[in-house]
Image (cartoon, rainbow, N blue to C red):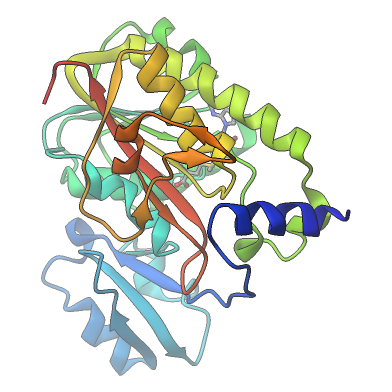
Length: 295
Ligand SMILES: C[S@@+](CC[C@H](N)C(=O)[O-])C[C@H]1O[C@@H](n2cnc3c(N)ncnc32)[C@H](O)[C@@H]1O
């Protein structure tokens, strides 16, 4: 069986019929930098047609543009970011962010870090980690372009986050994952099940370290752009059973997390997670978690 067929068969077993997808390009307005600038109107008058993404507070689809939306003065001034629509969801799921201490544990190139800082209006602090030195440097440049002033960047493995000492009120785990075919045309040729298993193991290790850094009433948002349940529901089931975490209900697009995977029954609370199959967005998975007993 080809790798393509192996994965497509798995999606069918999980209840989703494979179809080719065409992603829509989207941007996110950085409210702090674009305040009073009437950005949607300003972009429209320069030839960029926009349509509000209904499920995102600051997201817009690009419906037509005469030029690359990464080449405008407004983009270079950090008034908006080019950010895939599903990828804009995780940062919006935290209850309060302003004034909080936030850990963005797998942060480069910083798309969600900029979004978090914007939602915090540059208040509180963000500690942004990435294991990759080059990507950490690129993230620092990205943050500077977007005038982010509440963030410290560390080139550090998230599995060593306790070295930083403090506890965090909010932790974003946008973990390294296997990705999905909708955002990578070569995905089926590149990926093997061994990659999925290796990533799932690293993700568990990152989750376990994050729990040690989480304030007792803190919140974790876990996200992947992987469709593979080993990196999604199975990891959340494992976290509920082994890390003293409980899943939380969230209000965002997507199907409820799978509670039965290839014949294996998971903790019913995994249904609180959201699974987005590819369509106008890429495939995505998101789950909000708290320590047991903290509602
Ligand atoms: C999905 S990307 C993050 C995207 C980022 N959150 C954003 O929105 O721009 C995953 C990142 O995790 C980093 N990474 C991989 N293993 C890591 C680890 N053990 N600790 C910290 N970062 C890691 C990768 O270098 C990569 O930049």
